[in-house]
Length: 113
Image (cartoon, rainbow, N blue to C red; front, side, top):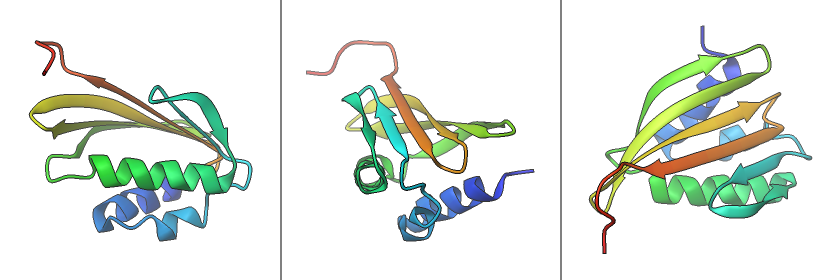
């Protein structure tokens, strides 16, 4: 069974609107990503980074591949194609949305120029 925060996340992604999800992001939440060199702390920063990621990645090709749930966390594996490049990644969401990490990598193959 999908945890309620993850259901809310999927609804936000499907609607391309994070506003309902933002209500459950903790004030001291932390966003981590290989695209950002240091953890970003605070609800405002986390919300900003999630909105930016949604704007870039939430295309017609974006889809979740698999999901795993723990007692206090979830891992959501996704795939997307951007400018002809296949990208795989995971969203790691922890403890009442107090921590969010997005890990992204492109598929192996020639580097686009």
